[in-house]
Length: 158
Image (cartoon, rainbow, N blue to C red; front, side, top):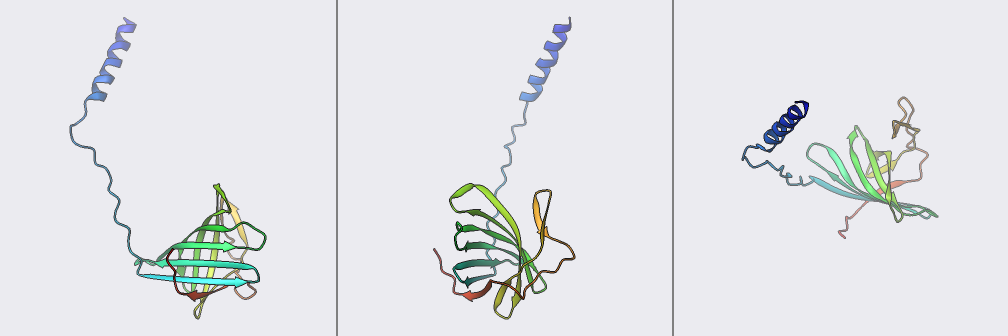
């Protein structure tokens, strides 16, 4: 009797599970990518180091782009930036790979001060909370004693 009850329950589940509406499943269609309202490129040189930034500004003020960093005696950093301006300071998250290691992705916060035509990469104290790095609240970001001042350049398509 117990087996008959289990069998009936299993049979009911199979029947109800197989009864689907014949409505086609709605497959989400990706919206076309929004075109940026402005594209800017910047580069910085300091001794043997180079930074190249391509920055797309979208209608809602969001910033997204690509940044490559070549530092002396280290593998090249290649990645993407995403963030927004708060006043005259651009706060971004830089997600990148280092050298040929495509298996490990790194992510760091960065702050750029827009002064005249330059973007000045600031130095600030970063702490990690739950695996995510962020600038320490209440600690100033230094934009005066810096290495990297990015100057505008013409964007080159690859």
